[in-house]
Image 1 (cartoon, rainbow, N blue to C red):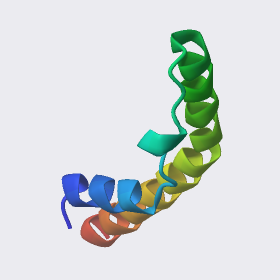
Image 2: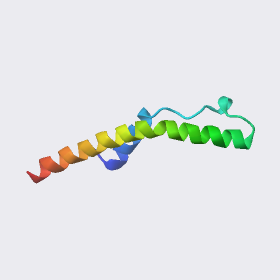
Image 3: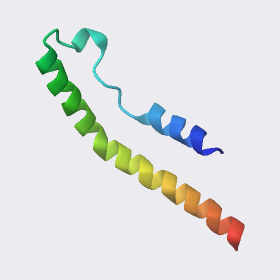
Length: 65
């Protein structure tokens, strides 16, 4: 599996940001909501990163042993 494919799989599993109908018209409020959404993604990204790194490590170890 290529690194690009792993990245795409990881993004598919990530929770989606706010839908278009949930976005406010006020720019400052929309910016605050966007930052909140991105901060909410941090734990999910960390989990996915750990899984991807473990996969790469297993593949590397298998090749080098």
